Length: 274
Image (cartoon, rainbow, N blue to C red; front, top):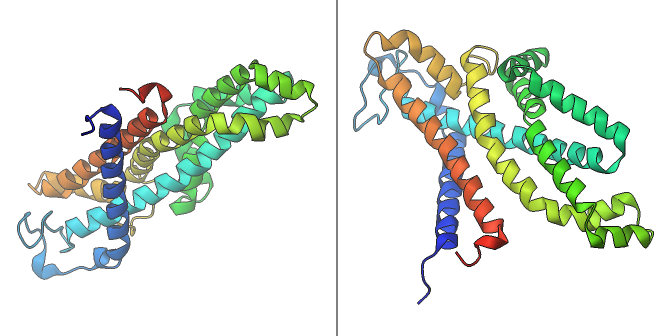
């Protein structure tokens, strides 16, 4: 009988997180139209058997709206994190292999972006791109690549000193062929973990700027919109309007973090015997 170990725990945690997040995303697609349905005969109902998360001042089902909002946030997180991670891989690799001038320029851009308050830069880019779904994705993608790019750059600089890379250079292999054949397979685990760990940041920042009114439009059942609208009703005792959407947002962020850390353990050869 196989002994339970840390890698098996990581597999279970990763699978559970992925299944939950996929289920929420799929449910959001299915409820997208129902989330907009209003019914004044059921407005301001507290959480109960018929409506798990209660209803709001327009009689909308908060459970359906919360799932739809989370689904929207997850889709934005996946798209923006994917674009951001590919940008980080490309620029980080270019900085390390294309000489001092390119390295200096890319490093300067990284320092510039990291030196500007993050949420302010995100709002400016999103607003300049017209807000909405496209503006939020572009804003999040262009502000979340810097840390991973630095990590990739450092890894490539170390790889350049490896014996097999030097041998490939002496055999006349081109710079980009070396990157493609010898470096990318080594960088892929870092890229994949960085991609997954970017998701929670992307989701939280999307919700933040939408909450402040600079993200998705008010008619969208997004988590930021739901939380923003609920603020004026908390003083009236309608606590459920903010509590459940907020808790599910936190749970979603935690699950992305758990998935990233579990994947990091699975990709680490040193954890094979743990």
